Image (cartoon, rainbow, N blue to C red):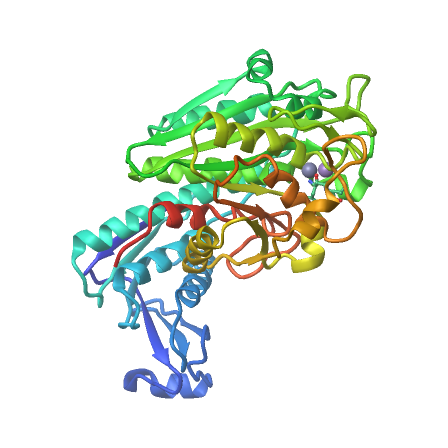
Length: 472
Ligand code: BES
Ligand code: MN
Ligand code: ZN
């Protein structure tokens, strides 16, 4: 729990120092410790009977919001480790708007609170932190509103992380739908959950084929916020609550984290939560086609030729390339039936995206440069990295099948591009579309900066900032 007091004093004092800057009072201490003010350099001076102090380096270059997130993440960890429950931040003017600065500071502190564990002896104790912002100018109402917004965004990020970190014995289509409904309705988002017979009536034949093998039956989750006259935007998240690969079974090591295959769903649910809680004036519909990709006598098989809601036939050459099949119906439904005029889909779609970009960048495919630029801008503001692959008919042709309209796998080459373009075939014509392959960024093999190992909740911030940008 973090409590922010504005224009207040008291507690451990945090001093920010530019490179080679010093404070007369502490000069000999800083010299002795060889504190030089390098960016993110941190020095702790605890005291039992007087004020404790922390000195923080700001370096010599211009400070960026991402630096502030990182610095406050480190500070949050230091406060927790040393049980410093009340701190006074003497934040200097940084040349960034104060509202965005305080939001980034809050964000960094919140990131330091995230923890996901199932250890039986784990203590569920909440670290209470009171932050007094003393030297900080700006109208209180604006700064407060910024803090509230960032609290809502981070609630959305943590919801996304928790949904993705929970394993597939806990999160399956039914429970995912229940949690989405419960969480989102509590913040005023309209949620409709369709069961199998209704999904059949809607005509999502491709999606249902992927779902065929599982005992846990699929759900279609539709989430809506409609309180603006803007063009409706769709957010579609891949919702494979488990991906065994199906008959093209995965290797043991490739399978044991495949509860993360609803990372796209986690992000869109987290985003809708943050938007709902912020009472954002937006017109957005989110769609998750949730199912498991399993092996059984009823599973779809490699070689099957299946139908789709759009009417395009699909030759299934690999049952492990299931995400694009479920997304095919979901993006068609969102743009043809739900009236979305723009669409973003997010999916842990291909291992190939990690070959191309590692865990650093999300890989994008888009049919609309203008729309992509808006998404990219929102991602930059959020400190989330996206890189667009080329959009080219030459790659589209690879998705053509000899016997059906499309095939669900091509060769090894350009795997993330062909997978994205496959999904694009089902988006209504002339609809601006951005596809984000988050297989590398939604679930990490190692912690990095303020992002934890495992689920990251990537792009909740991007989507929120795209739909509801923060002014200064
Ligand atoms: N869910 C996987 C992709 C994935 C890989 C997500 C690693 C997260 C981490 C997806 O359904 C898949 O299996 N893709 C195949 C496609 C291939 C069969 C064309 C892959 O990437 O190997
Ligand atoms: Mn798969
Ligand atoms: Zn998958």
